[in-house]
Image (cartoon, rainbow over all chains, first blue to last red; front, top):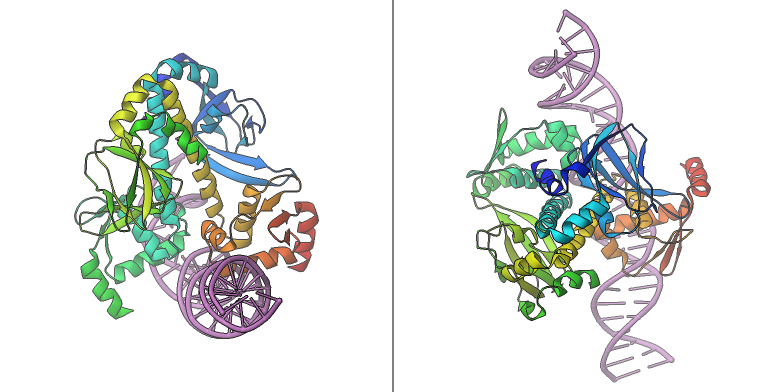
Length: 210
Length: 210
DNA sequence: CGAAACGTTGACCGTTTTCAATTACAGTGG
DNA sequence: CCACTGTAATTGAAAACGGTCAACGTTTCG
């Protein structure tokens, strides 16, 4: 949230408006002229594109803390619909104001670029993890990515149900994978933390047992 | 490729250097001071982070046409290794030059922001598709996302093997899904193109047969 | 205190992966 | 113009894997 505020802060604070929507409310429609960008404080917003024949594709589901419609800043009209999936609270910034600010204040633009660059890096990393088919492997990759220190230790600040969703498997499957990894001695579980055991030590055991 | 060039063009063209690497060559190492950013013209580059215990995680695999290490522009040192997976041709831009240009030329910064914003939008969309579990559904979503016109038609410029990889399933599974979708009349295949049949017409049939 | 959410494990079942085999082409050299 | 070769497109069958359902103990929180 801190990083998100950072570049929005650069816009004239006065123009930053908070606004509430109820579930199913429409924030904007495909084709409408772009008037503002958004930062979701709470709730979920669905971005959907409608095709010529009436069918649709969900392009993204924005969650609390995210900004969205950034690309619209560079387009004349929105290229998808934004509909509140739940009640939500968003902050809106006028496109015109933002562009005005950025044309003079290069620092503001840099802040935006930075925000986006990190976003890209994170999304790519997430994507890489999701490309791993095997559950144990994917989970290990996810844990490695979030672990720190030597040996790598993972601090669990969220519950496994959440993590399961992020990793892209069901809660149950994750638990099974966890106990498998523990049996293979690739990880060691303690209340609130997970220690990732080094390849060398673990892989020998794993190969024998399986 | 056009859009990628667009913001690199804004950097002093003289400083834009082409450079070749052979497979396994190292472009930069984690911890090194950031000196440049990259645009991959051809080949594949792996971005890998090493952990304290020597194990590693792949953060991303850059492919031809992509830029990478954009986030490093805002960091003092690279946070991962970049290793050529194949022989490749990259364009490099000095970080110092780029920052200098951007501090005065707000247009250049906006161009970068635009490039990144589109990247974010595309990645999110890709991600959304990958979150669909069912192969037929995911494939339909992918096709809808890439189709144009009414009825939505998909022009096949790549072979299915490639597409299968992008969609996140094996080649064989995709073929099976294709024939299933055709049987259900959700799509109609002809040499080089696929027509997406409207929900209404197709879904009735599908429900009966299954 | 009780309901709801979280953590955990087992069994069963449907979908995908794998492995294997076959067909369809496009380009190549004779 | 044809046999020849390699890659893409298909389809089949068996095995592996994760989803779903079910059951139960444990926390959490109003």
